[in-house]
Length: 77
Image 1: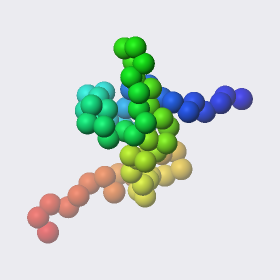
Image 2 (image 1 turned 90 degrees about the vertical axis):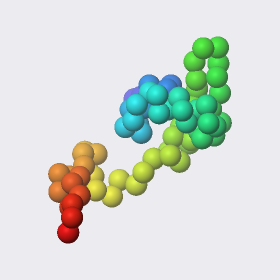
Image 3 (image 1 turned 30 degrees about the horizontal axis):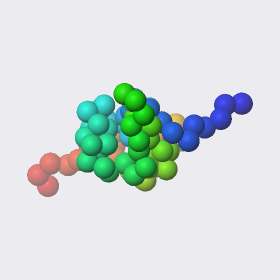
Image 4 (image 1 turned 90 degrees about the horizontal axis):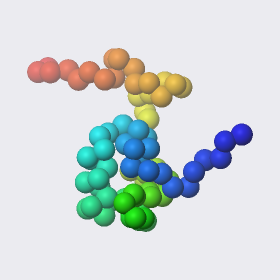
């Protein structure tokens, strides 16, 4: 059984938020991930801070995949 980490790395946060590493670093330097600390050359980001930034998964199925119909927006209309 694997324990859930209480702190994440920048790469792990990028995967969870489905964004780029640069965006995560921008959040860190702007102070938008509360409780994040720089330890040596690496960042440690609390899981709670990441969960607070996550978007609701309204249009995702049980596997976390967004349905095709909801991923497209109508233009014009």
